[in-house]
Amino acid sequence: MKSITINGSQRESVGKKATKALRNAGQVPCVLYGGDKPVHFSADEIAFSKLVYTPNAHTVVIALEDGTTFNAILQDIQFHPVTDKILHVDFYQLFEDKEITMEIPVVLVGNSRGVKNGGVLRKNKRSLRVKALPANLPDFIEADITPLKIGGKLYITTLENDAYKFMHPDNTVVCQVRRSRTSVDVDDEDEDEVEATAEVAAQE
View 1 (cartoon, rainbow, N blue to C red):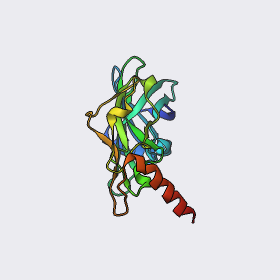
View 2: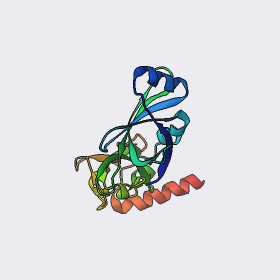
View 3: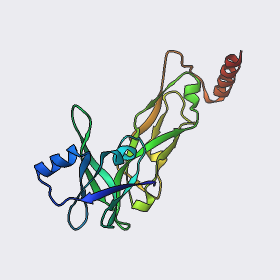
C-alpha cells in the first residue's frame, strides 16, 4: 500500500489554549494511539490534503522533527461544521506483526453483460473493511463485473483473498445489475446475439 509522509512537531502542551493557538497558526493537533503511550503532535493543515481529500487508501509515516518516525493509519478526523477546516486528527500506530482493520476502496473492472443489455449497475459498497498485516493491506480491491447479467449480484465471497480477511457477512452484496425500462430479457445462449445486435445498431 502507498504511504504518505506527515512531518510534525511533538506537542508539549495539550490544553485548549495551546490547541487554539496551533489552529490559528495553521497547524492541526494530532494524537497517535496504539503504542506504549499516546503521542501528541501537530502538523501543517496542507500536509493532510493527499491523505484526506482522496478516495484512495494510504498508510502514513509520521516524521517528527526530533527524527522519530512512526508507521500509522488514519483513525479519525474532525472537521469544523461550518468551514470544513480540519480540527483534529487521530492516528493508530502500525506494527509489522500485528493485524490492522482498514477501509479499502473497491474498483470495478470489466463490462457487465447485463449493463450491455440495458441494465443499470448499482455499486452497493464503495469500500470494504478488511483485516490484515500492514504488509498485506491492498491499495484497492478489484471486482470483475463482466459476468453479471440483469438481476445478478456480486457477493463479497467472490473477492476472498488469502492475504486479508473481510470484516463483512458472506451475504454482503458489493454491486448488482438492476433491471431498467430499456433492459432486455435474454437466455445465456441468446445474450451474445443481443449484444452483437446492439453493437451494430450503435455503429449505424
